[in-house]
Amino acid sequence: MAPNDVEVKLYVIEEAQLMTIQAQNALLLTLEEPPSYVQFLLLCESASTLLETIKSRAPIFRLEPLSKELLSTELPRLSPEASSLAKNDPAAFSELLAAADGSMGRALSFLEAGAQKSILARRALTRKFLKLVSSPKSAAKTIDFLSACPQKRDALTEQLCEFLLALSDLAASKKTDRARLCFFSDPSEADELSLSLSLPRILQLEDLLQNLIEAIQKNANVRLALTAFAVEAKLL
Image (tube, rainbow, N blue to C red; front, side, top):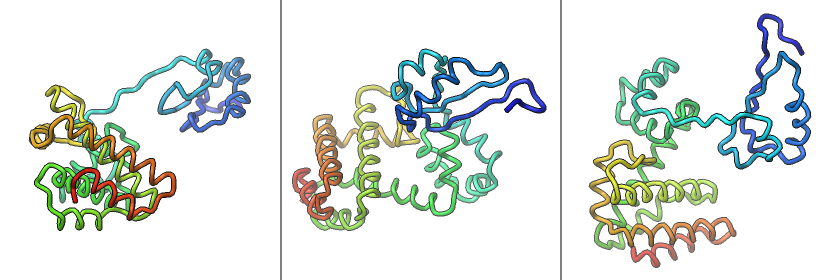
């Protein structure tokens, strides 16, 4: 359909990486010979997920994550909820900015009902995990930690991925003070925690977490899998 008020109509296809091969092929002819008044914008996490025939007909624009400073300035302007949170609970606001990882859309979604509480709880449990693995073994603390872990597979997998994200930050902090951190908003926090864990220990924990994620995805018993992880990680 031709535009009414402007010269060009823009069609935005979000999460283009979810298109099947058949869907991409169906779109191909229109991309090859679009009407003069139409442009398409395909949004995707990685261009590698699209067919070569699609990529050859579309210029690729790679977007950089937004800085925390820009997010902290613009998010309150766009959202009354963010503005209120920034004023009344700056610590929670900072946590949400860090969890957004440079994405304005993700940051806005975290402000929706229920999402904010879930994000803050997940990040708090990740810090609890890091303190657990970087301190002397304590069966009581380990059992308390295991009890706090989600028991539903999807939620647990999300949580375990966040553990991996934080461990990757610690590994990067041990190598350089210029690493782009994905979990921590404060580099000094990552630096301090990285001092209490050796690089081999971080890599060992990452391997064990990957194995745990695979076991959960293969329908392993959640409680048994978590307990086995704790034993292998020498937390019990």
